Length: 303
Image (cartoon, rainbow, N blue to C red):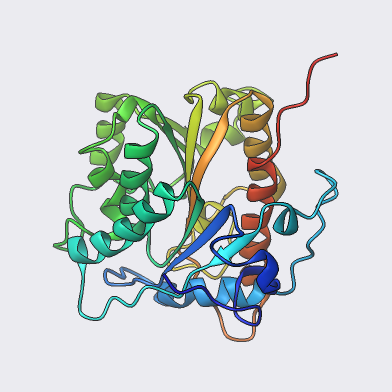
């Protein structure tokens, strides 16, 4: 596996901290886009995230450290899909993630459309068979198929539900779906925290804790940036109004760690860069680094 050098890797860090041998964290870039249903451009997301990350500060005040130097972050060359689509494309991603997990790396997969997440989830499920999936998204992505494709970005969680226990899936920020998806959620007992319910206070003031209470000890995060409100994240293919804000979203991650649970893997998808608008790219890069900082933080001991 080829690793990118300092001028092209995540955070633009020196080779001392970004070789695969030295790094605990590995970044997989999966610039896959095949089932666009509204706005396109997600295939450019991984490159834009890595490029913007060069302007993210190394120091995190909350954890009081520079994680990239403490643990090291290796950025692999983007996967070249060629003519591979659907299951064939997912197999390419899955093989790379499998190999990195065998090397005991913490893997971050960058998309690309949400279809790609099926692969790292499957790989992590083999490595962490008791894990939960924490799914941040504006859409539940549970359609059996969409626009004639069972591998649509709108169907990725339906594919996950075919091999993963649905009671261990928790969705946050959902605010756009069809009635069949709502019925599927009820039938399969998926833990879904709708944005409207959060805003109406139906999960209480500390709704983030209610989310965490549904999770197993090990937690895999799949993060569609359209979970954010379009005011802070306009650069995505299917933006939806009334989304979450950055700080309240990070509070979910904080609550995961505070509870003693462990984040075991992460993917971030659906950034569709907009020419002349850099803040969504930087926000996504900062989000990834923030989640990594929290993932490698032990919960505070009670006095």
